[in-house]
Length: 326
Image (cartoon, rainbow, N blue to C red):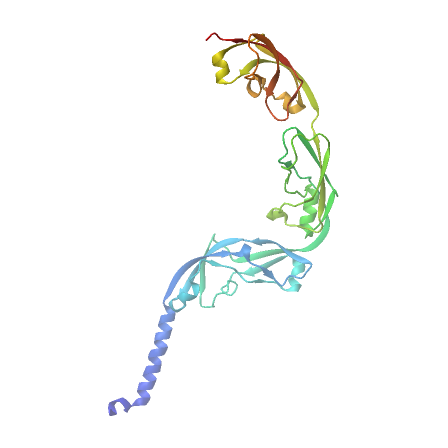
């Protein structure tokens, strides 16, 4: 056992050097990883209450990283979100630059950024602006779901709404004549045969503004929906007559019409009546009861089969019913 303890000082130094050499060489063996940086999703910290981040450029790019073999486990991910922290004395400048470094991407210092895609991404810029309040005009919402023949008009409680937005954006929206828009109001529960005007009360729900026009509405907007039947019109139509009878009546009787066509007056909303196609949309029919006396003329009411919104004046047609010989 003396060979183990002999010259132990030299053996200890050799062991230390071997461990140090292994650590050094393992740290020099590197691999490459390509990761997506999603700067647009990074929260900007350090903003005071009266400032807001307006733009982050570029919003997304890729970085090629050189990673020590010993740190591979630390970069087993597909995306990175940078750390964007501003100081209060930087806000007045409006545009703040963050040099692209490992620390910005929350990486250890020995993980190096070799390249970016697109090329020449050297920094991330954050544009900030002071938050302001102001008024923007409104665009009344549309009404959907109404039955044919009904008209609706939306009256908002206010014509301007108070919003909060970056001062520069608010000024641009005003200059462009931008209007705050709302979701459609759906009123499928209104009966199609509404005879008198009706008013429905609701709250207008704002649409989410586009990213380039990010504002916050500071008040609730109420709306009244005034619903009324459309103006009525009338048309005089001549239609072929159809006979509706049971198979037994057809088999045992002879049925003849005094006239093959009938003239009827119909009424309905002006726009719907204008588009009505009688030959396609209407059927004039005589319903023949089984108990009608045979060998006689009978005057029966004409049934008009068509859209629910259509009304018609009463009209009758003459029918001859004869008993067929056995």
